[in-house]
Length: 147
Image 1 (tube, one colour):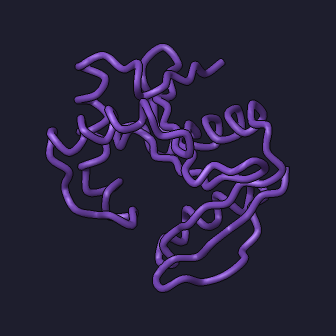
Image 2 (tube, helix red, strand yellow):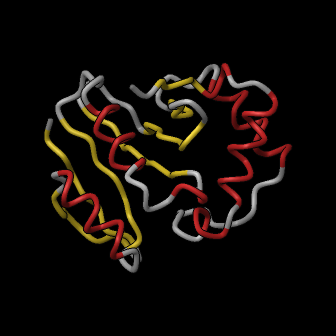
């Protein structure tokens, strides 16, 4: 079973590992904010999470850290979800496992996400899990999953 460790509880080495993953081209190129993040920006972001009631980030850990999953724009019944996997572990089924195990812990009626329209493998992945396409916003496709 995957353990989800809140970013506000990460050790220094875990913070650095997450930053390394986030700044890898394979991860950041698929994000809305695709620029390289400095360590200072990363640490400020994690510190801000301590008081932000609408955003939660988690490190997914099996025996070792395998990815990140997060909720943003959290409201009473819905939230935006996002995920990325350790670039060295992509294609091994960890993303599906992280997402499925995390979703069952949520007390929400729906979750939605935004994915780059050009990221066809991710779109197919989300559709297999049950997400439905809802609308286009610029270069992004919004998808929703009713829980």
